[in-house]
Image 1 (cartoon, rainbow, N blue to C red):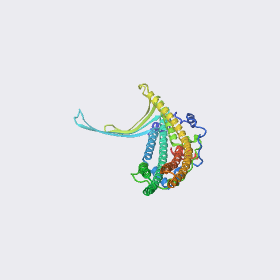
Image 2 (image 1 turned 45 degrees about the vertical axis):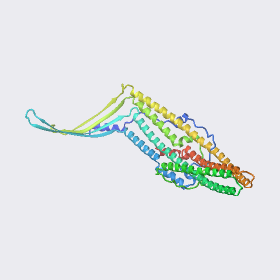
Image 3 (image 1 turned 60 degrees about the vertical axis):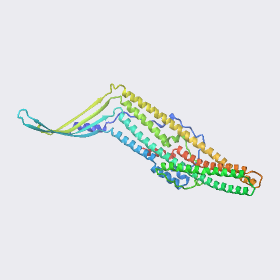
Image 4 (image 1 turned 180 degrees about the vertical axis):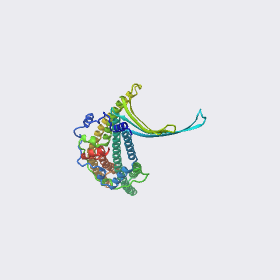
Length: 470
């Protein structure tokens, strides 16, 4: 190989661009949406756990979440999108390297001599290596590489966000399923009680101690309670079907573990500082990475307005049957500069397109941060108020139990009508159903708080969590 060609190919491997883009600093992003100094609502003190769903003390719940994280279709799609983004990043990385191609051509032709009138056969061939390299003078290729890398990291953050959403949805669905089971069990036990009451009242009516009105009222209350059973059964069937979709299963029953009241309260998790939330939540990390990608794409579009330099070289062998000294070596080396002069404003319009996309990404990041702060505050406040509501509902249940006992005794002793006992029964059943639902809502609020906090990463794990997405 000629020395000049060797020097050229060696130079192609070390040439680098002289410009690039920088990812926005944490300080500049914090200036977009300054985090509050502390949360308005009181936070808990329980340590944040990565696999927070195990804190409910139900192995069946833990298995269902694990199964969903392995089989959920949305999550598998997110993993496939991550693989695509990483492949695109590898494609863009390859653009920074020289290209080397090999070409081989051969031709056989027949011609007739005008002098002798005899046919003449000719064989020709050529084999060559072709090298090319675009010198990244203005950092366009480097910017596109940064954009592709940022998009890959954003896809990893999106995968983590989907995984967090799937885990929280399965946990919430399971809690609501156990709440519906408890309410259905209460309705069935109440229906048995109503049947005994109706039989007793009809017996009193037959003995002349009661009236047909009381029997009709007791039967109406029994029918009202009976209506709640198929309604709850339908809700359970619908919830099981939605859970099967989350688990990528065909329709079928969902296994149960601990009863609603046996689920362990993991305790309100410690929320940490609002500023830590910006690095903990995967959706915020994804929005930040999308913003970095849009910054890099804008830089690449601006560099497109400037001249580009491309170097090329070829080395090969050629031969023909009519040439003496055949075959022979051919080589060439050179470069070309392409400067855009007129393109109807296409390149400048592309810069405007990328600038608009960068502004959209910045606004999306701002909205994501504000939404995250609001979600944490909402769940912290909801937990406090739901606790207060549950205490009052439990006290109301105790009072109604006393009222039902007193109304029943007064009715049996002839001091009051059956209507008083009927109203007490109706009110107690409604409150008992409400207490069960409030207990489920309180557990669901803890799940939602873990989701709002980004899945239970501790402050020490923040950097490792971000690094794992890359």
